[in-house]
Image (cartoon, rainbow, N blue to C red; front, side, top):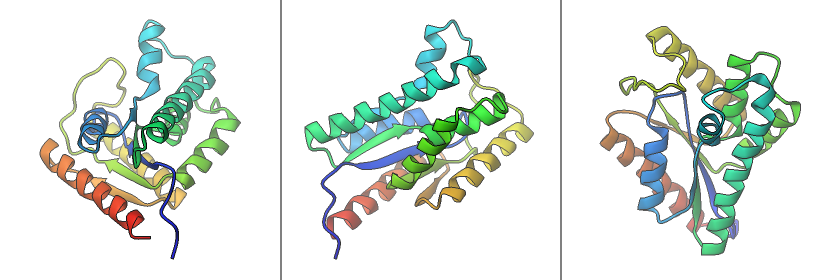
Amino acid sequence: MNPVPTHPLRVVIFGPESTGKSTLTEHLAARFAAPWSAEYVREFWDAHGGVVTAADLDAIARGQRATEDAARARAEADGARVAFHDTDLLACTIWDDLLFPGACPEWLRAEAAARARATDLYLFCDTDLPWAPDPQRCFPDEAGREMCRRLFLEKLEATGARWTRIHGSDRAREARAGAAVDLLLNRCSSR
């Protein structure tokens, strides 16, 4: 029998653009009274006039890592059982490769792989929600969405991490995600 974890569990809300990740992350954090980290690239984008270049990838990845670490530190300080992350470094590697081929920092690949292995649960948000326009989004057409879906699933499956598919309406997504987190918390409590 394994001991009950003394550190907060790590749950990443993961998937292509326009799949409700941010909304779902905030919902889960409220439902479970837990800290959460936002997707750092949005903050970076706004602070830099809506421009991201290959030269920015290292700073974006470091910012993403810092937001995740801050949420985990808050969870530890507050005694929370879980911390939620709106995307992660694994997603950064996908976007780096997709938008800036050959520019992904090597340290990022190693760190993303290590963090993926340490993630207790990924919630994969599928592309069945209607597209919501946003200046940061790149692939609004069906072929682009399917290509992104495939890339995210392939990367996720390659990690060997535990994950659950989140799909359906907003309410159905909230219910599926909440049930998956409840199961994780119950499983970890019974160890």
